[in-house]
Structures are given as C-alpha cells and as structure tokens.
Length: 292
Image (cartoon, rainbow, N blue to C red; front, side, top):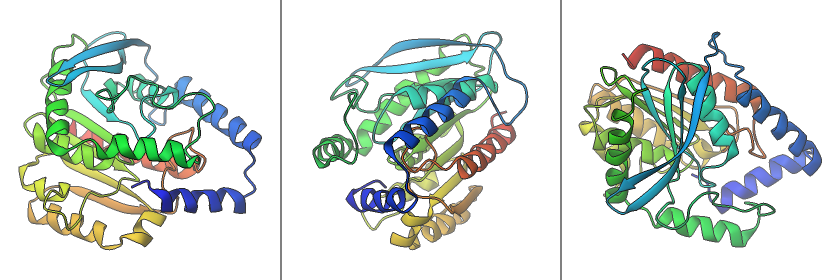
C-alpha cells in the first residue's frame, strides 16, 4: 500500500528514467484521452451516459460518478480509487468500463471528511504535507465503515434501471482500494461475484482485523495484481492470500507485475501503459467469466 517508502521508490524510479514534469504531463494527458475516447481492448465501444450522484449512507452522503451504457441493463461494478480519491483519471477508467458493457459506480471513499476532489490543483503526492493529510484520511476508515458503505453502494446499483440485477456485481480497487475490495466482497457475498485489486497492500497482515481473514465469507472470484516493489517489501502477503483463497475454494489469480506501486491509473507518475493494459485485460476476462 502507498506510504512514504513507496513515494521514495517512485521518486527514484522517475529520476532514473528522466521523467520530466512536462513529459509526465504529456504522457498522462494522452493516457487519459485514450481512456476517455473508448479505446477498449474488448472491441465494441458502447455509447454511455454519465452522472454525478449522491448516495445516502448510514454515515452521510457520498458523492460518486455513475456511468453506464446508454441502453439496456448491464452488470454493475463498484470502483474504489487509490488514496488520491475520485478524480478525472478514475472517471475516465469508469467510463472505459461502461463502454465495455458495465454500469459503473466510482466512489469517493473519503466522503465523511471531504467531497471530491481530494487534492487541489497544484498539490502533489510528493509533498509530505499532502501525504500526511491523505494518510490521516485513509487511516480514519475502518472495517465497519467500509461494510456500511459497501452495502449502500450495492443497494444504489441494484436500484438503477441500467443495472441487471440478475447478474452478479463486480468491484475493483487500487492501492488502499485493495483491502476495501476484500471487505466489500465479504460484506455482500450474495451480490459480489468478481473482485479485482491493483497494487493493493495490507490485504494479508498479522493484525486481527486483516482483510484476508474475511475470505471464508466471500463468494467472489479474485484477480490480485501485485506491484513488484510492494512484493519486495512484503513477499509473504501474496502467499498468505493464495493459501487462504485455496483453502476456501475461492478462485484467485495472483501475479506480481514488473511495475511499480501505482502503475495502473493513467495520471500516476509511474504509470506503465503496457502493464496497465495487461492488468486491464485480465480484469475484463474475470468479468466476462463471472458477472453472469
């Protein structure tokens, strides 16, 4: 999971590859444009409708982005962003999923503290003060809150005309969204049929509240895409996940990708297009097999 060590890793990587601020801005802009233009790996691109929505939970009102094919009913998907929260990159990723035939809810997991955007123009995750604020918000969430939110978001999707409630729901999470995905799958096991995590961390720890201890409650098939520097720091985590999933007969594809923590969002300083596309393709395979 993202922390000060991860930021140091990523800063070193950016420096070693001579990634200038201007060069990254150009690259990120191109990647976002690709997401927004509907360049899917699946082929057909559907016309979509996009909405900014408010969802009432037991703890307040969550702002979220809801995007779905303009016609018909489709499987629903909940997207949990990384620590930088709901922002254009995740709206674009949600739209790309919708263009492939899913009704997608991209949430602001920090709604109890602040509406999106979580960071303002000019703020950078490389700024220690910004990281301290974001880490504080992340650490302010607990398992009970996530369970409450997961149930509210599932209920929202199941109430939408564009969602086919005869099909299972999917959920995806990035960075801190990894353990949240696991808690979501455990909170609503009858509805969550597919779960995908990308450079997640803290999914299998020694703590009595570790998300992996909830695996016996789950019924979803999993895709776990691990960053190489996360794996170097906690190599046992993937093995604990693999063993626990197998012991509970939960299908799980777990792989360490040759990419840095944060490689999937197109606005990340360590965005790796080739590996991000490979992870995206594996996600689409999972959804096509299980959201039925």
